[in-house]
Image (cartoon, rainbow, N blue to C red):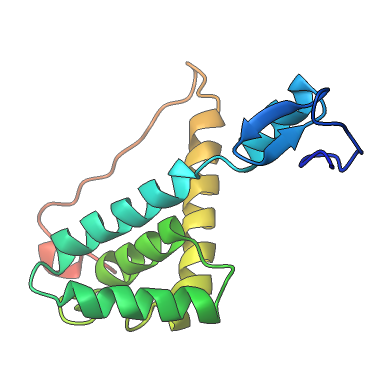
Length: 154
């Protein structure tokens, strides 16, 4: 028989059982196999987080239809992630100001890359602002002209 992890030929007496009819040649191969075949909680959590977010922005939507649309979207665009889709919906709703209450996944495939660039820019800007040193000798000067409210943007 062969080790399930490395493929090395082993005898049943010298092997370590992983599961029924699954054997490894060493404890390290057994651990590597279990680690490689462990359930991926972060994918399930990402999907749950996406559905929870959709429930908040579109509580009356048909979730069976959303599940089918999501499966088709992930099949057509395998590079998309659940978190990326959630942030795209958030971008469409908050930044573009479009209504997503009836079809939350409708514009995702068209705006995914645009939303990705926006969130990258936003993250970079936040880091840049956070890392900007502020010295004590700099002063902020504010000019106020409260009498001329009609010409705020002039």
